[in-house]
Length: 414
Image (tube, rainbow, N blue to C red):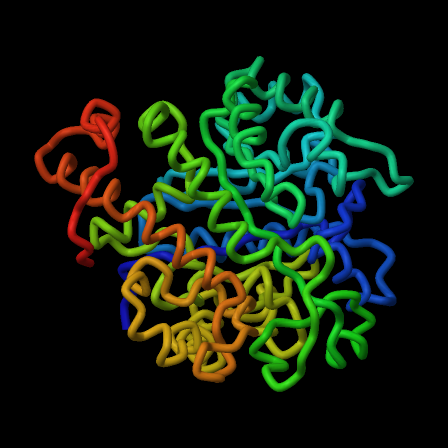
């Protein structure tokens, strides 16, 4: 069967290693799964094999590489200089796009020049103003990181490097939506993504693996575990999004890109979701670990979801495997309560990792954030309908700022 659509591999070239010790991070603890490992640096052999196979396998003219961690800048500039060399070697006329996800604390002018020269996009982790950011994002010795991250942001802005800020929303920060949003506006951030932090205390599977957080819900649906103290509350998260949306839709549509709202607009326009958590199915975006291991998903790097090694298998063979196809189908296995929900078309049950709550009729498998998403999607519905009408009439969605005169009343339809 010939492929017409590409796959996506998110690479973790330094595995779970990081120079920070963010309390809510779900990934750094994965070091426990490599107990005998001392060196997490991706070898040149793994790097070259990955770049060659990934580019060669793609039936599309553009190939997107995403480098994440841990903290990938720990590898140093030389590593990424080698990456660019190999991409040029194997590009075969295809356009190569690179994105780097970083905490920003190790960036300097050398990094700035390299990222600019090689057209990297950068995702920067910044939770908000100093008092919010420093609550959980600390160095390994426990020192605050806000000033260092702000220096990193200033450097990226100095070199004109496209930046998307990733802001983690915790139990505490969810009560300060406007403080966070206004801060991002004041520092000149044009692209923002809000990520709800939802983690549970360790279940029995996690304890056996030496982990401090529970494994995904699909591995332990029958086991009751509590969410961590920093996990966002469902309805409060909904209110957080609503408060920022109301400010954004009146003043900032078209000038500030809040990815959460743009993902929602895709749903109202009837377009396929571009982010996995709101897609009908997932499974075409897999994870490459530092040693070449491929796993089903960023949130499913556990032995049960190991698909093979990039050194010995073809990317599409792993993505098309029976195990990964079943993983993809499981995304659509939502409770009946979800199937009859009026906003299911926008949510699709969100991430399966979070489906550990009970439906009103006592069935397990409801997304923990359901109440918040229902509240949020219902609130934005009339505005989304207006933006859809503008787009359908070849007008920019930003024209909604001119349209809004008072509360909008639009019949709810999908």
